[in-house]
Length: 449
Image (cartoon, rainbow, N blue to C red; front, side, top):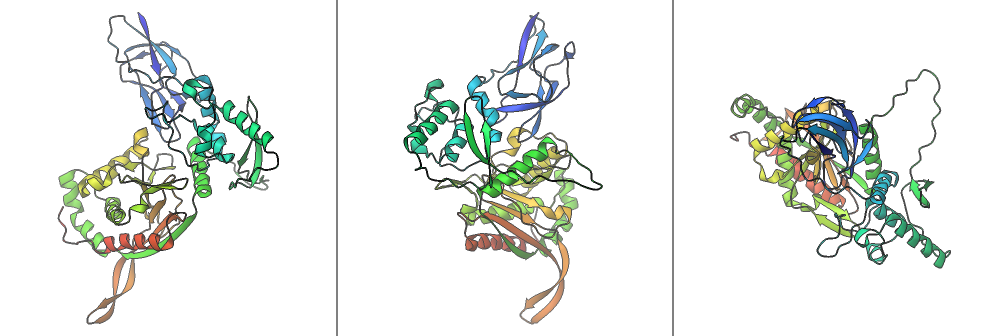
């Protein structure tokens, strides 16, 4: 007999920890290889962790609702000594100090900083690793990347730890009393955050206290709703939101879909909805105006040439998530349709993988599915734009022809674009939105599938 370690798997480049939702197996239970042992959750998506070996559960090292660092051993499986085991090489577990910093990241509000994305360790080019907490402290204290590079680090491979940057900030305050520049933060309240090393003043949003009276019902937010709320607040604090609207005649689109949907489903084995048609129009328009697929990094604009389109989808519990269609510009309409349906089905059945929700460069929200005719969506950070499409309604419309004007019943839809006014002006935002509208209006009703 021998014991095999089951470790918390790597779930994405930026994910350092996961929460254990439910253990499917307990000590003494038999387990097959690839059989689900537990359910876990990150700030992106819920996932199942399969067993890496067949045997019997010997020990569970964490309880449900525990937050566990990536790479940590979470259970031990007893197997026969002659059994084959497919145990992947786990990533190195974060050091204690690093993990403490990771646990505090959620307590520090997001602040944009002109820094490259963090990497695991020091790269061959000599770029230093900075944990998310160190970057947030630097942002809140107005420390730029050049200044951050000068701070000596006492961590592994010369990394700057939380203690290093707090000591630097304290020394800086003592050497330049009364001469510190006030750093703007969007929050209106200042709340002291006590850590085990020192006192750090952070600027966090503190909503006014609410006194309830009368006949009320109080519902606790679930984990996903709390994360959605935080992401929405972070986005409004980061980007200068502006929303433009356009009206488009999608009659040709509706007539074409009605004509081909039965044949399409019979041939491809999946239904064709309006969403892949919208995605196709968005991709064509982004190629004309690439700034809409970008991110802001301090004073730099990073244009994303891989067009990964996020689509808001409903989870089984009613919450929304944004799975991503990777390289949407390289897919034809059939490929887009299958990807849209696969991701929507995975969201409904709670089977999305962590990689399904990362890497988006532009987001589409189909609010028309719920009956809304228009909306003002909030940007999905770190993107700079999000488009919403409303419900398609039949309306009387004036049609201009060479023989004169006439009134006809047409299928009309409102579309809206929320964009980051820091880098996208109203002219560009409106031009892009109208380009999407023209793509939809010019849809070829005789198009073959």
